[in-house]
Image (cartoon, rainbow, N blue to C red; front, side, top):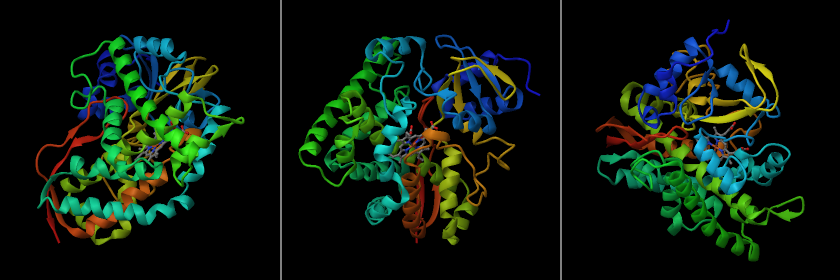
Amino acid sequence: MQSQTLDIPADVTATLVDPRAYADDRIHDAYRWLRANNPLGIARPEGFDPFWVVTRHADILNVGRQNDLFHNADRPTTLTTKSLEARARELTGSPNLVRSLVQMDAPDHPKYRALTQGWFMPANLTKFEARVRAIARAAVEKMLATSGRCDFVNDVALHYPLHVIMEILGVPESDEPRMLMLTQQLFGPQDPDVSRAREQLTSEQFGAMITAIINDFGAYFAKITADRRASPRDDLASVIANAKVNGDYLPEHDITSYYMIVATAGHDTTSSSTAGAIWALAQDPAEFARVKANPELIPGLVDEAIRWMTPVKHFMRSATADTELGGRRIAKGDWLMLCYASGNRDETVFDDAFAFRSDRKPNRHLAFGYGAHLCLGQYLAKLEMRILFEELLPRLKSVALDGEMKMTQATFVNGPKKLPIRFEVN
Ligand code: HEM
């Protein structure tokens, strides 16, 4: 039976909206408390509209699979203050500053998704496998050249997936630092180390900062669009530039948003998961030895790292009609936070949910979401990680922490931003 108390206590609510709590274990303590005491309650933080906090695996699946009943585009798709939402509405006429796949619903969403879906399917990705392996080998060689000590995030994990997605997209290597900076600013605006502005910003300033980042992306990709329309190549940018929906090229805002999601969704998330795996192995020599001795465990290591790290902490949905969920009455228009990182530690689904186990089977994690918006890049992410570990693990004799791991402070996408390790080479 569901708890009668709807409202989530103020301290737990404060944790949910505090970017700093995502950089340590406080967010998992809050999720654990919610799963046990109020798995589907309402948070009413100051400055935000109230929202339901969905923390159980089963309830997240239930919302994710009902895409007509729970929309993405009607309200902000990520946790957003009231004033920032108002600013977005002023600037774009919609609650979100961008209009990429995640900010769409049917009928547009399936049409836009179909434009690139084939590119991301395993049958097409096999074409890139040799190239991805070459990029992975170069990343491993660079790491090994550090003579036994490195910051795994900055020396390996950040650049490898970025390089892969930029090659697929067709962005020249010389422009990658710019893409990396823009992505970090877009996803980490709450983190003082990666933010454009280091002091606390007002919503006006924050809105202006994000708009400037979007304009930078737009200006950059406008040139790519013109080039690929004039002379299409065998790259994903050519597919996006020349795509037509209902007989027309995509409107400018949609096309920038499309490039942005492809350029940004794939590398921070994949690098956080990759770093998460090394963090786990560096803390557990027995697990490292087990995976090293049994390379067939590598796909399991990859899945477990994605579950354990869950870089995308949440997405929001809103109800299109009155309904019932997990014993609660949800009203039309209500806003819901799908806490993927909580669902991925749900004790009723995962044995010893806080432990890292490469041999976890089954591993039905929700880190890629669920339903019509299920991550388009999931096969690419898993392929990249598998290949990196196939290249890296045979070369390593040992790996250990060499200082403190630090996570980014962000309520939406986060993961390690610093992971000092020591390692010995075979
Ligand atoms: C470990 C790495 C990754 C994680 C954890 C991750 C996670 C997610 C999540 C949670 C969603 C939203 C699902 C939902 O709302 O139900 C999503 C959507 C998406 N992801 Fe990923 N992702 C990863 C890698 C990638 C990569 C490599 C790409 C390649 C470009 C990518 C492209 C996308 C796109 C285009 C969408 C929007 C799909 C849609 O709305 O239809 N992701 N991802």
